[in-house]
Image (cartoon, one colour):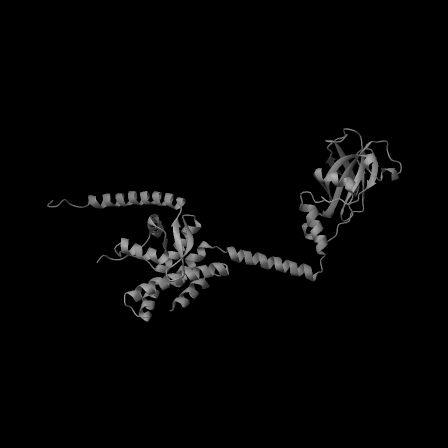
Length: 250
Length: 113
């Protein structure tokens, strides 16, 4: 057996390791055998005999490989299997022509801390500082309130366009987004065309959360600490109470 | 000539070797043979799983250094944790060896007895 064959047999036992780790072990063993051979050459051995003596002293390569393998228990194999599983899932999703944008939004609205932190209208930019996290499952769709703040009706540009608007000075601005309730349903865009009844004032307004995020305006009285959204789902009232902070509101 | 022994306390011996200086694998084998007056016989390849195990446990750490031949050698260094383990293991071994000696010496008849 040559040194190369010896290290080949050791590393053959180490398929669970990365290529880099296997090469490092091979180099270390190579170095050892070379040191031993050189020491014997200095003692006057010829190359062949020095190599034979060295190999005889190294011991069983499979035993070394087995002992080494115990130190790296399936770590890389697990990584490989996970990578293969991910690739398989990606391939399956590609084959079924999944909308990656939908998957991303479903994950983002479900998992992100403050999923809506960019507002098209500067009016609502203050909501970035007022995150909340209240969720309501409505069948396959979950509606999530992710920000809620108070603003004056005077500062709300569209207040004047509201019909039958109540006599109030403040409105709560609540950001809602929607995502698939089921993890297995990430590729389905979740539109929510329903309507909420807000608080106990029987004041209805549509939920803007139709497949994206939107800000809903709810009239509030001074000091009101929360608004409640009620949705009637197959005859049953589902509710979501969203806390309000009046901090900094004049 | 003394009969060669296989090594059962390789970890302890390796840690002990590294207590004096940083060493690479082959150097440890040579030093082990020298210190034990060639009593211990070790299949040299089996040293490396031991070294890697000690490294994984944080008892030794490895670094590369160029040998005079230009080849890179992997040296092992005893860590503080390794030093503490060595101290404990050494004390345990001495207690054990002392106990064995005490038992063996009880069976020896006094000279002329």
